[in-house]
Image (cartoon, rainbow, N blue to C red; front, side, top):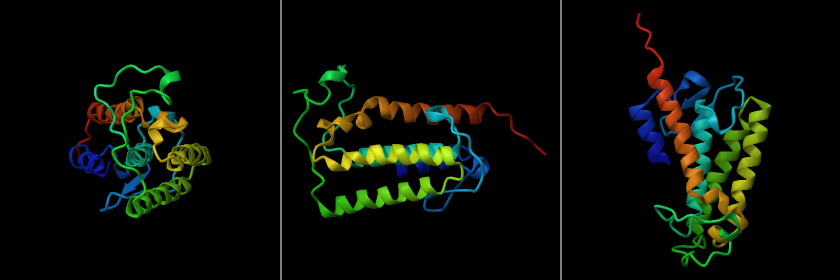
Length: 177
């Protein structure tokens, strides 16, 4: 996700820029400004929401032990946890370095969400982060009840949110002095 943020900053600098309540530091670490942001769910194109959603997705992807199949086969909700179609895990989070990385990412997510000035945004994101971090409780999170955070639909939802922001940026007329 750091690569995605870097590419967005390079090619669409205003999508994640300071203009709507978020400041991007040189190391791509988001820092919310103290401004009121109205929560607009996953359809929001506010930079602070985009950054949080990208970082939350990054944590769920870092927990992944089984590669996501592409293109995905249709799976019914009942078969998601017990489906024999799941392969053996490629990696498990037993590595202390990986566990430390995941915990560090979690701490940064909590710090960023706690810095949101809008209480509704803060509560919404803290709950979402808490839910996503439930993935850490499972050796193979893709076979857990938390697998919904690791689906192609989750990736697509964040991608669609970013695309809306990019399209909104390109449809905004430039103001020339």
